[in-house]
Length: 604
Image (cartoon, rainbow, N blue to C red):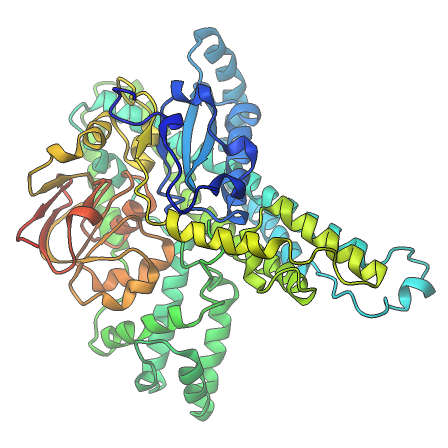
């Protein structure tokens, strides 16, 4: 066995009851002997649960696109793409860096020319990007999954089309996969440049102001208005309208649409007006996933209206009490200006101030995209994608190749094509699908294995421990630093009641901890609680008006939770690594969002 504090990739064996887990994933995701020479970390921020066979496409398509963007399209000078492996259903990643000075110089020349073209035309290109994404979503929704009727439509003959319906099963499925892949290329087209601009500004500040905190750098770009806040804003608008129309008593905390919507409809003109407003909000703003868009079971608000409806009673109460539902954007902008002026005045020359002004202006220009893209990509298009895949699941169910529609997600996307080909042949031959029970025991086995794998405690890192971590992106997004690695390597040495993380959003508060792991636990949150969770998702925003503060296991100062906490003016500490393991619901804790420390104040 290795003396390294982390296990080697090849040392990790299967979990009892899931020995056949490899069968769910493509051969190129399996660990190879040479992987023991590299450091990998568990990407629990994006893939917090074991991956079903089909859902692995969310990692594959994302890393294909991100790597192409960084390595081949924009040629980031010191960073290329990501290699990933699957171990017991969990996704581990390892970054590829450029260290040869000559190669860095070569890539820098390419990068500056290409990235500069985007930065100089950012607003125009972003507007065009939104149009391209809108077209992708429209095309995804318009894909027709053939019903394969008893007889093909007569127009095939009369219009001499020469192509039968079963052909379109394949083309429709291919197009569904292609559009999803293309979305990820659009996703990273501008995102990595957005992060890149902020990283350059961050590094300048760290060099120019050695004592500056990560949080103060982040606060220089706070006070933004982004699309990811719009779904929550729509709920607030609906809450105000419910009070205005005297419908407020009809909304209950369980959010049951089968009860609430008929009751509203029965209120005549007032009910019709509110329901019309609901429909306006739903398209497109309720196309937001309850997760972060990487698992098929993370449905959108439109798929499950109980999620947004259950948030309305709290907002209605605040409206009736005369309290503001607005985020403290103006205060954040005033603080932003104060911090900018304070640090700018410390610079010693006109050249330094000019460089500071230029980098800050670019950061302000590109930063909204860092959040805006999520609505179009991980949420709107991705929920449309999974729902389109369900239509293929229904086709396989009708032909008894699968027992249930959602069984399709237990098949790798290449296996789905095999199952569809069986159906295509069945329709053409006029006979039942051949060996139609082939996938049913496979589906059952994989469902059972995923339950077992969900209980496995995945190591946070594997492979040889690096001497230090200097990648600012790892620090800002995942919260991974050299200090983080040492805490992972020796977790049993932590006896203190303090948990160290990143000071994501300013303020110090004490309160009762509420440990949540998914949106299904929302009902447990009480007014004034402190949220403790692995990581938050955009659809959790309605919770924030109830909370005193937030704490997460994962994330750095530019993670989604950190950004949202700052915009809501709520103290937060992220990247603690083990908050959900060491804190129990009901314990009193102190959250110091100025220093990045969470203190457990009483025993479990």
